[in-house]
Length: 288
Picture 1 (cartoon, rainbow, N blue to C red):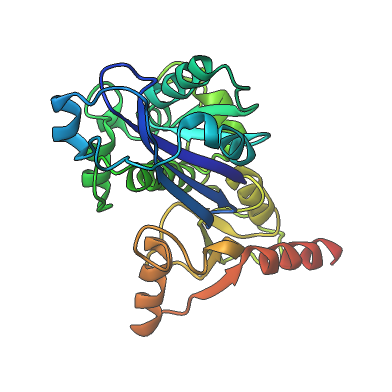
Picture 2: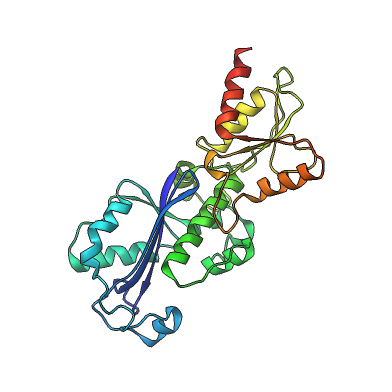
């Protein structure tokens, strides 16, 4: 699972007047690299925009022009999924590239606002702006800084992936379907196979898995595990994405991971496994 989340700030109402950009590259749920720079938009700064992001002519003095970093942007985005919260940033990049007559990045776009509206019922038709969503989800960030906004969009996407069990490829298809699409079920909970060697175990997944959450749930149920959506005192196994032992958003571990460790400290018998170890268990169980 790999994507780049991005955000732009603009000098005025013309979306091509990019004056700051922020990019974050994630792979398997883990932050790989980040990039932030001011940009000389070769345009005027409107007082309204300055009041929002605090960037003006003096801030961008000596900063590169977009034509100077166009190829570097392509290096980030070519062949990857580009994530932005609403399509304003996508349009801004397109207009800026047209303005300078340079090659557009060859990437696949995913709108995290559309993901949000299909993940949490309270955001389906209103209140799905970046700041409001993050406030309700408990993610703190400095809004209207391009890098901070990009990280926030990435956080929302990863939170949606964890909640729904849908991977990036599934989300690229899901956002094209109506909100509340009747044939979609987010539930991955299922009973374990009574003949499976791990029958009686209560298993929960957390974090970014290499395989889709639904496939992982099917694998777990086949070997006997009852798959549950959340960690509680009945949980016996927590499977964590290999890259999610240390995770984003100001917390080193997911909320499910932290809750499991709290329950372990209170005496609950919960075994925490990495995804790769879970897959090995499945292979061994299927050989019996």
